[in-house]
Length: 530
Image 1 (spheres, rainbow, N blue to C red):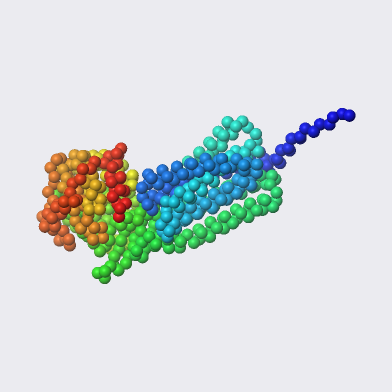
Image 2 (image 1 turned 30 degrees about the vertical axis):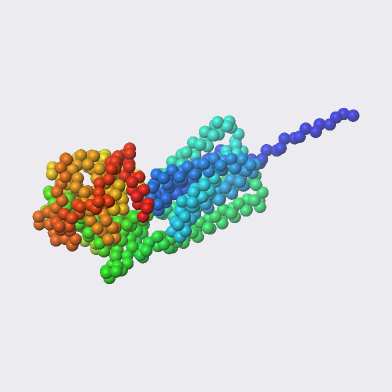
């Protein structure tokens, strides 16, 4: 009796894609491109949000990227069993990624405002986003091979080339398009919608012959549900953002905007004196209270203008309150104000409560406004200035720390006229003594004689400044003859301001440089306690 063959027959290949091979390949690579762009935007959105809300941009960036990259590895491994049904699996992964990434900014903002658990929530969201991003590539590689078989090396090269180009476009779109047009919260939602369409619709359309009709309908229904959720949240985003943001501030918010550089919030209430109290916050940090800001700005500006003052340079101070004090001297012929954020100077020029405080200073014909990074602007600046007023926020980020570096003050010297004076706001000698004395040490290291002084500003507490001039001789601390009548400052107050209590006198601290920004660590460590 003859033996019969029992060898298994090969499984039939899956049906060909519903689109011609070349078109299907193009559409799939387009999906790779869009998904890569969306993935990078999610990463940038998480790092930017952390920098705005809690500062320490280097740490936020490091944690977000590290967690996402680790989760991508986990996601790639987790996707191995899913390659048996790559079409449905990829559509589900992209739907979940669109939902998770699109809602990530909202979830973290709510966690920060109401629950006060930002860091654990950020790690969880970053891990979820990374896990889903990591699952994309194995599934996309399987789908690409279904369209046209090619050597593994060539397939990987094609896939990653398109993936990296998509990441480039996403990285550029985030600061240049999404933030200016939509803002952080709405921008993430828009990207989530693009992610859902690119990841679900394209793949289901290309491979619709390879999945059952009921599965296809379920996948498209899921995509529609994701889009509906994102669209609903988009419609409610402004109300949600206003409600969440108000949780972070004691007084009613009268203006709020997020720019490519910072989060600007203005609050307004009735002070205990009965007058209006307008407060400006940048990235959550108080910049002034209208009740006592004159104390700060008089102490900052007038000692520096006790010498020559025909030409004055103000670095920072986009609220124009320091500018207001400078313009009180009739012999000031020209003032250049350099502030990074055009939104801040627009607000100072056009927002009623702020314009009232600065007296419309930006409309004075003697004033020239430059919106630029002060460090880079100084490298190419021309002209000479008799007095320089430096009014930057405290150096609690890497971007601000470079403006408190030896190199920065070296650059400043090239624009100083003979017998010029420079004043730097240095933070609080009481709350952050190492930070304050490091500012003084940094200015001195750059070749200036320095005179430290401090005053009390009730909304801030004890606050310090450093008056300086090129050379080794400390500049005298005094008011100019014929100075305008001031509400807070006189020569007696200035004489007293040079006396520091025993427990807040000079500390053994290092000057801060670009390569060794110790001012950043001092500031973070000291202010963390308050």
